[in-house]
Length: 416
Ligand SMILES: CC(C)(COP(=O)(O)OP(=O)(O)OC[C@H]1O[C@@H](n2cnc3c(N)ncnc32)[C@H](O)[C@@H]1OP(=O)(O)O)[C@@H](O)C(=O)NCCC(=O)NCCS
Image (cartoon, rainbow, N blue to C red; front, side, top):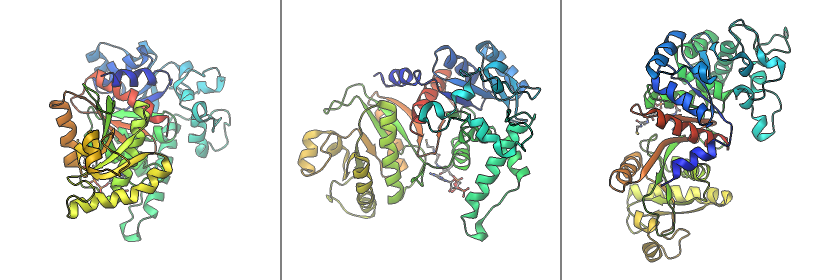
């Protein structure tokens, strides 16, 4: 049972960057410091000066001792963080990124250039170019509120572009001031826009925000990745004993987001869970769409939904080169002898390592059974299908859970 250790080890090789919006929480302060100490990622924390001071006192640690930058999301100002290690802007509005010496800084590191090679410009230059007005071509973010204005402008444009696709009577267009107010009152939205704009690679929050608030912020700032309409989630199940096919780690989806998915949504859930399995374990996925029926052994609406999902999913999995089969019962998916007997011609015969549940009740119950009766470690929920990496914490989480979720988020960010 080494899945989380492996995830943390692999994440620490990425030099990733993450925004932790809930700087009012002492657990977040502890986790941010641990991320730096253990070289898992470079965090940027959001919060007001008073919130941070209070949380630091409770945590018994100071972010500045670890070189961690803090942004006040209510103003967009950097309120702590070494200027030389933080190229955004300092309190006076001067930008250290101009010196060009800060290649180790979080925001330079956040540039997709270092990973994809696609973008040689700093993401902040891109993020702010529209509002620069040509006055200072060397410094994209010199005005005290330019970060906030840039994020708000991008949010405003993206929101209205999304609404414009809806029928006129359903459109909820907003103005710039409303966009700005959303970011200065909803810290997850502020952080989400930092991720969207490429300033950091991922976001982790939810130790205070509810799952619903986290999901809405994810949908409204990041949206879904290309070709995916529905975001979902999965759990990585780290088994006490490997399956007969030798898999020590499994993935279950969806266990946390879509209560009653349609067949089309099950396709998205299957593809995204297979991707998460690859990202987080480094292993090849073999996917089973689960039901109480194996290849027509039972009938009815519930079975037909899964059959339709498999039919729609089959060409997409074939294109992705991923093995997939269904509908099938759990035993046919995980026990080779049963798989061969019940599904003799199938692509998956008791050797699945990724399991797609027909609805949230089944998925959520299943991961808890694996955890509470099977003694497995359940890592998640890991959000998937989003355009960029963002994850939700349980409100009962520990600082260690936050660190682990940062590591998961950093691995997910690689394929975004
Ligand atoms: C995600 C969730 C919070 C959305 O609830 P909601 O706000 O009432 O839903 P809405 O239908 O109004 O959706 C809000 C927006 O998110 C979008 N959205 C909803 N679900 C989405 C999904 N799975 N993927 C992408 N976008 C989604 C909607 O299109 C809508 O966009 P719009 O505002 O641009 O029109 C809801 O699906 C939910 O509560 N899921 C279960 C979460 C849960 O309780 N998990 C606990 C189990 S561990």
